[in-house]
Each structure stands twice: as structure tokens, then as C-alpha cells.
Amino acid sequence: MSQSKVKLNIKNVGIVLKPKVVNEYTSVLPNLVSWFKKRKINVSFIDSEEERVKKLLKTIPKHISFLSLKELHHKMDLNITLGGDGTLLGFARNSDRRSAPIFGVNMGTLGFITEYAKSEFFEGLESLIIGRCEVVKLPLYKVEVKKGRKSLFTNHFLNDTVISKHDISRMFSLSVDNEEENIFNISGDGLIISSPTGSTAYSLAAGGPIISPRVQALVLTPICPHSLTHRPIVISDKQSLKVKVPADAESVMLTIDGQEVQELPSRCIVEVSKSKSKHVKLIANPQRTYFDTLKSKFTQGRRLF
Image (tube, rainbow, N blue to C red; front, side):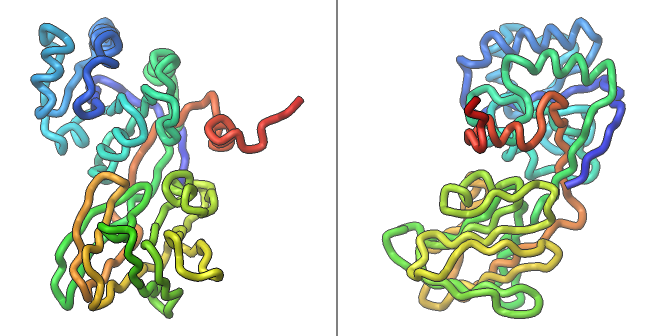
């Protein structure tokens, strides 16, 4: 993670909505579109959202357009995600070095990486437009599934990738290596490979540690290991990982950020490495720090008096 102050010249803004949701946008979206219109800022949505946006806005103003996902990343000066962490994750996974910064708005209560609450994001946008802002760069991690010399699947995650059984009542085994040696062999319900950003998500629920996003690391968290000694391990993210799926494994699934699922064949290898060409740029909220959010969401170390 790196953080820097920048001055954004915002003329074009993309808005990303939580899939299939309508009611919670009926008042927010028209107000937001009107807010940008008054400031002569063009607004764009993903082209697949055109019908839903028309229903929400009733009419489509001239300053609104619909673009492909790639165009939204590359042609905007800023992208706003309205939803929660899942909405941001789904959009951020497609980021690269050319992508615009993301202004994450949490429309619910539990969001952790969405920096702004529903009640404060207009104020945050105003500050962003008239002054400098803090941009946080977070790494994306590449996941590639190989069998022999053939590459079967490639994707990226911001939070985590999980290797688990489709039928989790059945135990299976995995072997985990880095570039130099074997890290461990486990039998259980699976393995979570988490970034520091994702350490407050599934990994935490499975007994993993909370890792500051400033730490360049990955967390390997076994899921219900059939052992008293297998515990989560924090390793450097400077080396790639190889997770070997054995020959007798059946119905093993790979899940990316809790959203995309890919079935894994037996005898395959899942390789995980920090991407050299992709990262995510998030607008930080100057009103709170990472540890403020941690205490707020998890009541970690809350003052008693």
C-alpha cells in the first residue's frame, strides 16, 4: 500500500451501482446526478445498467452516457461505487494502472473498504473537487490455475481467494509451497489466501489475524484444519505461491473475492502472486484512519471512559 496527495481535475465521473438493487437508489441517484450537473461534470454508467438507470432517473439528461466497463475505468477522472464492499470489489478487480481512482460509498452499515458513509459522501465529494485528496494504492493479486503446461484460468483479487470443497462436509488435502520450499500440507475444509485488505473479511472469521494494509504480506488461513497445530501464517507477498490440488480431490472450487467461482480439476496447481501491472486506487477519507475504521466496525479497543 502507498498513499499520496493529489489534485484531481474532475470533468467526467463514472457511477457504479450495486447489482439488482433499486429502492435504495430512488432518492440518492437523482440527487447525485443533479449535483454533478450543477457543477458541469459529465456522468457515465456501465452500459449494461442503462435500463435500470432510466427507471431510476425517469429521463436521461444530456450529460449522462453509458460506457463499457473498460471505458469507465480508463476514460473517467473518478469512479464512484454506490453499494458496499462487494460493489467496490467487483469493480476494482478490473482495475489497472490507467484506471481512475475509486470513491467508495457504503450504502449499508458493515462496509470496511468503502471509505464514505451514505450520510457524508456529498461533503466528501465537495472537498475532493475543490481541493487535494489522499489516494491510496492497493495491490491486486494474480491467480492462475495450471494443469501441466496449460493455463486454465486467470483472474485477480483484492481481498482474497479461497480453495474449498463444493460439499464442505468432506475433508480434502492441499500442499502449499513458495518459490523456495514447502510451507505446509493441510487436510481440512480448505484454505483462504488473503491480502492485508481482505484480512478483516473471511480470513478473520476463520481465525486469521488482522494485517495493516501497509504490510506487504499474504495471510494463509486454513479452514477447519484436521489438526491442532495448523494455524494461520503471515508470509511476504514478494514471492509467488503454489497450491497443489491432489489427484483424489473432487468438487474443489476456487472463489475470487467471494464473487466469482471456478471449479478446479484434480492435479492442478493454483499460483498466486502480486500483480506487476495492476493495482487499485482508492480515495481515502481524511476524517478517519484505518484504525478508526477498525475500532468503529469491530469495537476493537473502544474507550470505556
